[in-house]
Image (cartoon, rainbow, N blue to C red; front, top):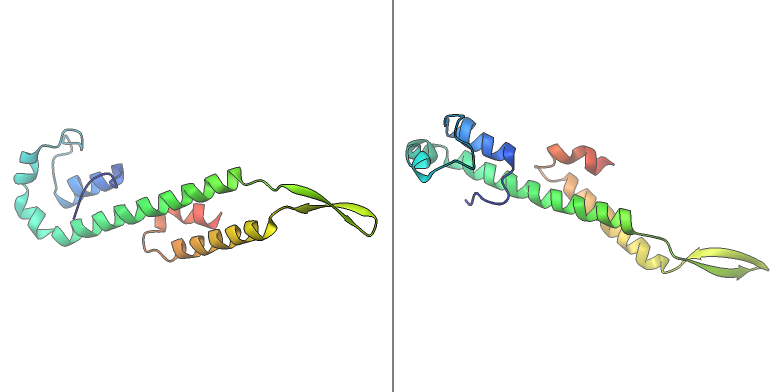
Length: 129
């Protein structure tokens, strides 16, 4: 179990105040090793819940990063059109459409996988969009 970069404000609050029952004056920024040592019995008693909190935080990081990557792709993906003559008419076709469709398919598969995560709760609106 590693508490670190994956912890957001909500995870810290859950750990410090709900699980360890520390004084609300203690924040992640002011937390001291001694604060944890004074709660060692609770730490040991709640090790499974703390482990699940760590897994949830890491799962949420993974989802957050995937959503960011998809959002960036959607915002930067542009269709490049090429002229094509058909039956005397000039029409526009999407250049490299196979690669584009493959990427869209990959993105849809990633969204489907994200929806299966048990940590999807806070992100479900973003995923459904």
